[in-house]
Length: 405
Image 1 (cartoon, rainbow, N blue to C red):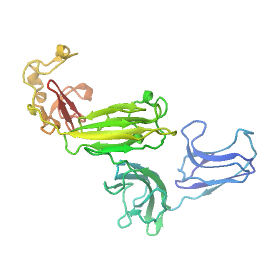
Image 2: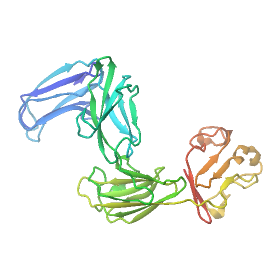
Image 3: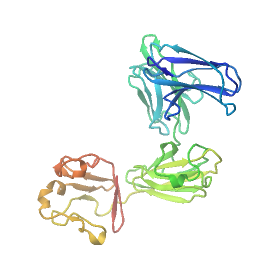
Image 4: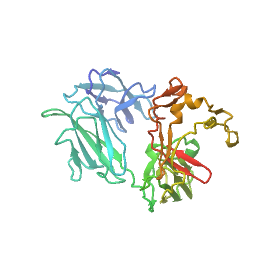
């Protein structure tokens, strides 16, 4: 057991005198209690010395060194030697991550107490300095612990490595952190296009994935398709096949609502997104695949209803009513004539059905608030997310309309 004395120091660990088929590892946190983080390890089938240098340590944290052997004999003599290597004057950034990844852009982040950085981006597997990569922050240093790669800068469906260096002063740089690898998304088909995709094996899916499915997993995201014109309705037709019972396709709309629960095997499905966006996911396991899967996007222009425009509650008793079904509206609640005055801030709210299929709820400076919003019931400033700020669309039939936001 070792307690680190300073951020950024490392520990050289060497084990000798052990039997073959042994290993040594070092973890932050006790390995028998769960939740430990490995900071270094080495194994070997021979009895040669085992040695590694740990990842940078965190001052004050407790680290455990543990030695194990292959099932037989499960015990061994050993000699353990350790050497503390003092933290460098300029600490290496940690926690490199990529978020907001799209087909052609991403946001790269890291953890550091520094105030100036450079980032190098390379095609995955390429050495630093390879032609085709580029550096951000060499002319004017990055002063935050993240940088956004603008849309259009990266290639779709491509793996990239990125490295980060902490600049502590003139000539005082940390070692580069990285590489950290991320994959840009596939470019989704646009209106009128079809994509045929031979999907790879992965680490998701598997037997009973559909039974255990509760929500979309960002790691399964394949592509996003969106209509060209706001208000249009997007239809996605899916065909082809996956490994039956083990690889799955599922779809959500732009708000994350599931439009198609996981399907597998021979696929023939169609979903419609009134909001004009679909997110398509493939969850495949590590065994065989059975593609391709085809995705066809079509977009239907929105036709505005004759009643499009601004609507308000009628300032009369019973204008706002709630019930268990269409034939019992008002059984649970109906506004009184007095409510027209008491709740005047509600009766002036505008329900705006725009001709392009978008919907707005305009609440002015005040609307009617209720106790479940964490305030006293009465008129007051709208409280997010119930303040009309969310993007919304609507669809309709001859007898009903439906709003989505």
